[in-house]
Amino acid sequence: MSSMRRPRLINRQHAEAAGLRDELAAGLLAPAAYISPKFLYDSLGSRLFEAITEVEEYYPTRTEAGIFNAYAEQIAASIGPGCTLVDLGAGNCAKACKLFPSLKPARYVAVDISVDFLAESLDYLQFRHPEMDITGLGCDFSSRLDLPDEIGEGPRVVFYPGSSIGNFTPDQALDFLQQARDASQGGGLLIGIDLGSRKPKPVAFEEVPGTWALLRDRLRPRQQRRYKLPSFMAYLLNVTIMYSSSRQEEARRLSDLYFCPPLERVGMLQWQRFDSITRQGYDYACEVLDAMTDEQLKAFRPRS
Image 1: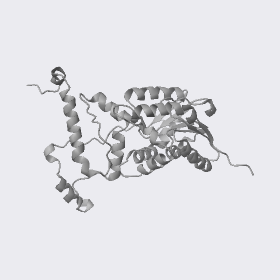
Image 2 (image 1 turned 135 degrees about the vertical axis):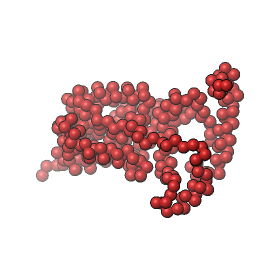
Image 3 (image 1 turned 180 degrees about the horizontal axis):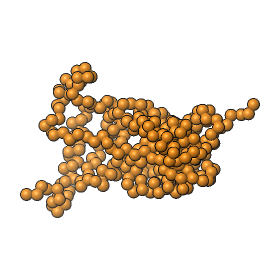
Image 4 (image 1 turned 120 degrees about the horizontal axis):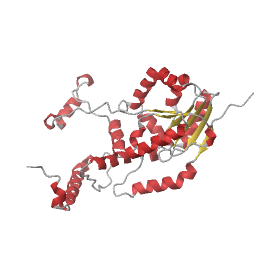
């Protein structure tokens, strides 16, 4: 009896360890400390993200699945059979796996920063697809996308779903796309982008409900509620996005005046500290404005 085929695993994390440590330290020591989302994806973080994709508020995964189901044949016709499918940020490989029946790739290369989690996913994937040539590459592709010779030559389809390109600044995104084009070796790029179709509805300040109105509405049956409040998981998800380094940098770039008060560490459930946090933010803003010259403040004064 022949032994079962095993996936290959190429681990570049050891070679990149020093650079990743320096990048992490630089973010934590910055005046406005930040941490890139990629550092959250160890084995536990990857499983937590899997759970987040199942909640109602996280729509990208469901939306992409619907797109793949509806347009799988058109995608396959454009790409052609027998390609090398390079999956960036593969995670549990579930998204790429759904494309296997239509794309019929000859080789699958899964790239992810979480090496241990990737290895477990590939073992199961190889069991389900014993005939396929499967390779895993553990590396940080966000800073440099350099595929090894072991994955083979020829055109490749670089697959980057999940709208994760939104984690990059515009300059970083352009550099990444150029690297992806070079890595494809004349193949193509299959990418998922959130076009921001869920735009918030403008609401006048007078229309914002008060605390008691929200509480009374919360006590009504779900079908009769007037206001749709985010769940706890939605708050957690939004906080994670707001504090990603790319979002913070983009906010700085687009703001005329950016305030980032040095707040003390506050627990998520320490509601009693809300007033003190507000006071700290107000005092910090006053200090910044007091330190500005009349010429600097002139741009922010209303014109008569």
